[in-house]
Length: 278
Ligand SMILES: NC(=O)C1=CN([C@@H]2O[C@H](COP(=O)(O)OP(=O)(O)OC[C@H]3O[C@@H](n4cnc5c(N)ncnc54)[C@H](OP(=O)(O)O)[C@@H]3O)[C@@H](O)[C@H]2O)[C@@H](O)CC1
Ligand SMILES: Nc1ncnc2c1ncn2[C@@H]1O[C@H](COP(=O)(O)OP(=O)(O)O)[C@@H](O)[C@H]1O
Ligand SMILES: [Mg+2]
Image 1 (tube, rainbow, N blue to C red):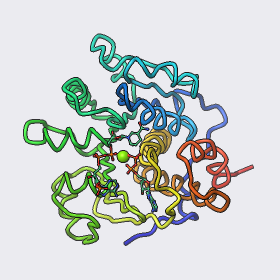
Image 2: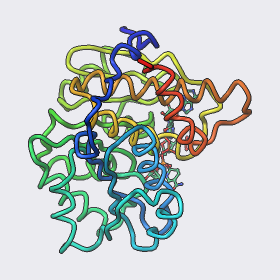
Image 3: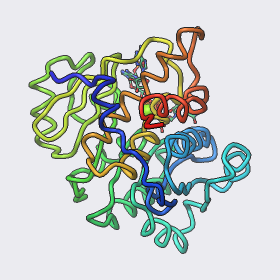
Image 4: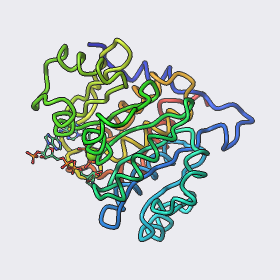
């Protein structure tokens, strides 16, 4: 298995052009957060922004708008249940996160199907959380364009997708399932594995202080943010995994548990420490 190391990530992180501007840094759309789980999509969007995305839009339940703007006034907002405005919002995004806190209602299924069916060939899609469950329920009736799709299952979601039981430590078996799905798979565990193209990478950073709800939600935001900023998409995904866990390692030196919010706040500082031309 290939290992993601700090040296590799430092060399992969893009250096910003002097005259760059927000539209060049990726427009991330985060879709999810029903009335009960608004925090999940706010965490995802905040992580995208703090990891450097140029523009972030959140499509969520209307109840979440004030909480979102109290946390990140930089983000734009749309009601995800409003199908008059959703198409225009989806069209504008470079990268879409679909699923954190989305819920499993019929309305959320409609949103899931809409985003999947309108995905443009240049857009990237990260399927996480409840969108993984919708995918499992709909896979026989829905065509998913897979080459720009990243699934981010934890071991329970992976079992739902493949019937492979935790700890899912048979790499070849996981690889076979990845081939069937064709998309990139980020299999989240203590040391997450990334099944990408014909390669398998392992994220050796990370620690048990990360066992906190919302930790996967912020990973989706970091992956989306990097996909919007990096030319090399494989390097973007691998770097996102490393930055997520290595920021947590840094915090765990002084924190008993590491909150996703604390990682978000530290992201610009940690990324700068890896990518410092002066
Ligand atoms: N602040 C918010 O709004 C938050 C909202 N959130 C949102 O909640 C939604 C549901 O997501 P979910 O992951 O909580 O639940 P679900 O899809 O039912 O999977 C759980 C099942 O899988 C199994 N399992 C096995 N191994 C596992 C493992 N390593 N890690 C985890 N589970 C593992 C587990 O087995 P058990 O532990 O019970 O033995 C159980 O049977 C989703 O949209 C998410 O974004 C959360 O992000 C929290 C913060
Ligand atoms: N013991 C651990 N060691 C390293 N990483 C962990 C540990 N526990 C959880 N994580 C990481 O936290 C994240 C949990 O994702 P997930 O279960 O989807 O969280 P949530 O849905 O609550 O946001 C994954 O990236 C996983 O690798
Ligand atoms: Mg999750």
